[in-house]
Length: 252
Image (cartoon, rainbow, N blue to C red; front, side, top):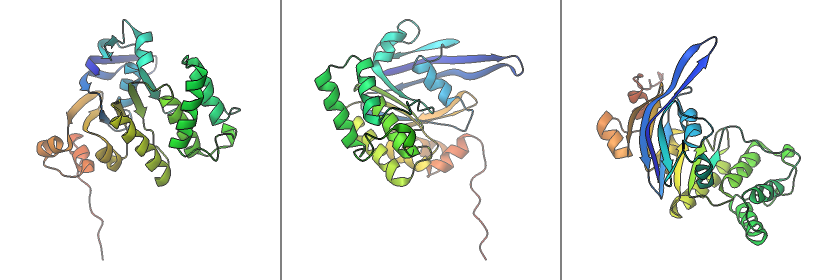
């Protein structure tokens, strides 16, 4: 459902000069699959996701999402996706219910279906207690639930999620993880970027590790273990980045 081929992005800055942020990245993601994209800060994860979501234009290469090319058919690509970025971009003066209803209208959902879908997502993300409270009064976890519900509102076949549980407590993270599992069971194609290794190991069918704009390796946990000789994803991740393994603290 997603085919990324030799995707590259170069940025030019007057002070820093030319920087290659993404360098000939290629991978495929199938329907009904959660594909993890892991890497340290500045590795090119978010740039890759923004390229795929047509928020940035590639310097080279391309990607197709559900058959539509990001270079030739960006509007069609955007119809196929729900994209969650690090910036939630919520309207503080609106309630979660109003935000969901508004975005449903932007996606041309008919009234009956839109209202039913809003109620469904409010229940799915356990938002009943704050669905009608102004968003600027909500906690970070409540806002993140709202942002993810908005991403899934129009029931797109492809979800692109950039660190959806960053900074959240365990109960909120579990609710979001449950929604992602349900989306996978419904046949959605999901790209999932996270720094939480345990979360990636639990949710992702395959994982790609990116560093300095290059894909280091892509595979299932078993394939990553076989290639590195490590067991835990944290150890595999460090090994692929060429970093030393964790050092156990001295115990008296």
